[in-house]
Amino acid sequence: MCRHLGWLGRSVSVASLLLEPANGLLVQSYSPRRQKHGLMNADGWGVGFFDGRTPRRWRSAAPLWGDASFASVAPALGSGCIVAAVRSASVGMPIEPSASAPFTDGHWLLSHNGLVDRAVLPLSEKAESTCDSAVLAALIFERGLDALGDTIVEVADADPNARLNILAGNGSRLLATTWGDTLSTLRRDDGVVLASEPYDDNPDWQEVPDRHLVSVLGRDIELIPLKGS
Image 1 (spheres, rainbow, N blue to C red):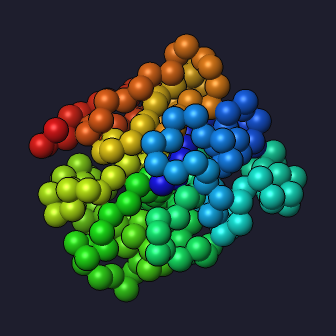
Image 2 (image 1 turned 90 degrees about the vertical axis):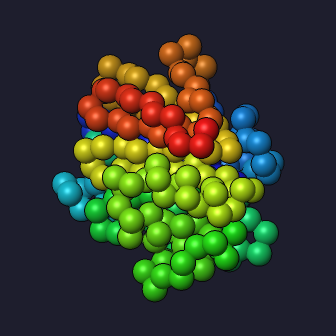
């Protein structure tokens, strides 16, 4: 499993979301509070953000807590749309930078928190890695993010044991699904956070029910039940 986080709003520093909060992704990499599967997320990390309309990424196969270079640069990296994740690799999956979210098609940044049997997914030359999350991301990109909910339901029908929490951003919108793991929302004065688990104890965090699609535009958050839920 993994932990991931998305931001949409005014430009903020990457450090303010990942490194500075009391229970941000840095802490979740070694001591997550709500993770249902796995005890830590030491198999890599990644952060993506938008430079205008262009997605930029920094990914690693090493634990986030050991990357001093990132810690020194993160306060200077800012964006109005950020997608980041720390990774706990599924058994048998490769541990390499290209297997760490976020994945991209050049327009969207996408993270997968969960696992899925690769046998139910079509092979794609566009997958960035052979890991299950990268192959799933390639399928989602091919189908289009407007069909995200339908794609998740179809994959879940093919693999009933799949856990399919997706988080994606394109610079002006965030989309997410809950299917087998946790997700919470936080509406701040300067934007909206979607996160696998709250990064602090702010009482305004709201947990998203399982098997829902979440759409964020501006500061508006819409929750849509997924078919089959």
